[in-house]
Length: 112
Length: 111
Image 1 (tube, each protein chain N blue to C red):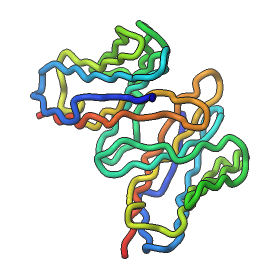
Image 2 (image 1 turned 135 degrees about the vertical axis):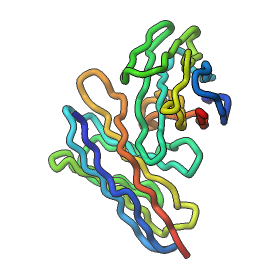
Image 3 (image 1 turned 90 degrees about the vertical axis):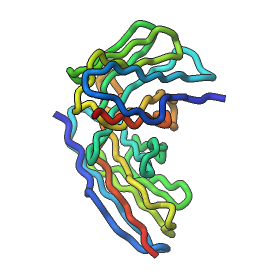
Image 4 (image 1 turned 45 degrees about the vertical axis):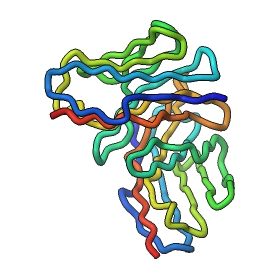
């Protein structure tokens, strides 16, 4: 079966610390993958998307970066977190057809 | 730029019908998604409309008018578990079908 995994579920990090969030999909090959952020009271903001290994497109200039080291792995990183990086981070996989996009369970990041 | 508008919050009574509207002004249009998101959880797919008209899926229906830049999600026989945020998202044409999300409508269902 096709599934998407995202971890960790929650994270509390100090300002200036690094970040690494991981997302993996199973049961499919060459998926289109996405990182979204949802700040309190705001909509989902697309951060990065990837159509293949090593291919990253950035939608918003920011303190974050993304990498796709393997076909079914998508990583969101930061070298130095800011307070404004706090939010709910969601990885998504383009399921296609009539099913749209499937989201991972999300990571609640609080930068203190 | 892209603009997607939805009401911030709505309340309704258990067993009733509620309509959540979404209007959009975008450069290009391919289709419109509706997602449901319970507090603290990931969004789950509800519907995707490409053509004008009403599509029904059980208690939930979604309507699209491309000429008016308008969609609505209709929820019938409301249940307490329908209390959630409902996200409208537009998929743009022109090579990128990645959905652009509105801010979502928080629906509160009370007894």
